Image 1 (cartoon, rainbow, N blue to C red):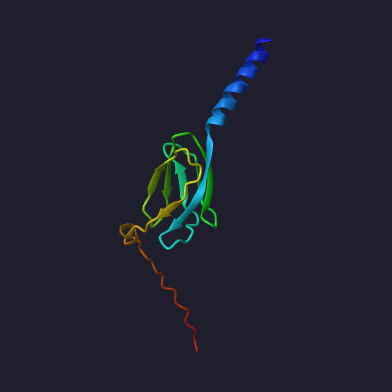
Image 2: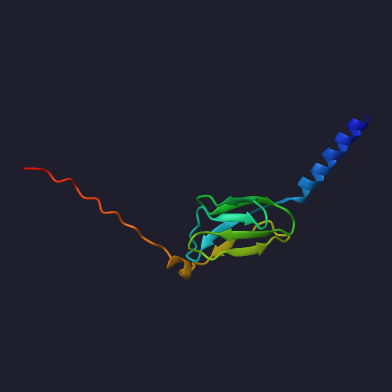
Length: 116
């Protein structure tokens, strides 16, 4: 009987913990209103995260009051606190400073010489 009650208690506690999480959905676009494919959406302070799909859309289960961190290479990172709204759309602005740090490397490949 004690084992049954303990199992029931653990089940109730885990259900309460899961019920506290909420699913946040939205779209990440750039300043030209184009979807940002593969942008990182992370719950701050955790390893809970996802990336956006081909349409810039994401879906993530987070704790109430969590802060979402949106980032992508070449764009400024944004942090948005989750409120009662379950749909958070974000527009990422280009980070010109970060774009100037790109290094381009070229490799010279020549054709072998042919003897005549």
